Length: 165
Image 1 (cartoon, rainbow, N blue to C red):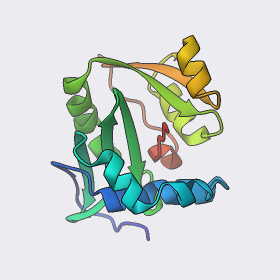
Image 2: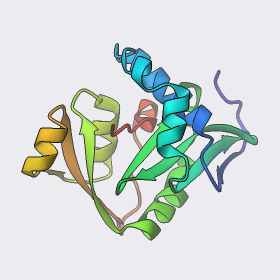
Image 3: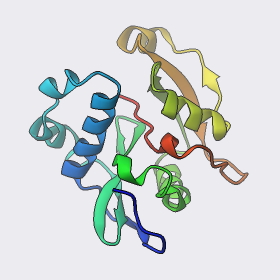
């Protein structure tokens, strides 16, 4: 589904966890890692993230994804049909995020080219993980994410999914 021109994207007070899981599931299926979904069912996902600070992304009032803040790290997921269209929500979502934490170390799966491109476009530097991070996330590259004084740069539409788990 591709949104029609003139449709309205809005930030909501909380992410819909079922939709967030569906957006994550689409990412894992697309990248050939659907086995993750055997472990992280919608119920398990909800039990982990229920109560976490979040903001939802909506299109004409219907949830399409959002941003969660869990264990000091953000996670963004958007349904594939909205890649590249939801970007007007990025600035207010980041304003909300940086209101919670002004700087954070964010792991990105090493094979998540969309999220890696998103980090690079926004000027967030790659950093060396500490020993504990390297042990717990050997598959990840780490970035230092902080509030930016300059406007965000936009890029390819597929960069909408920045998964960090």
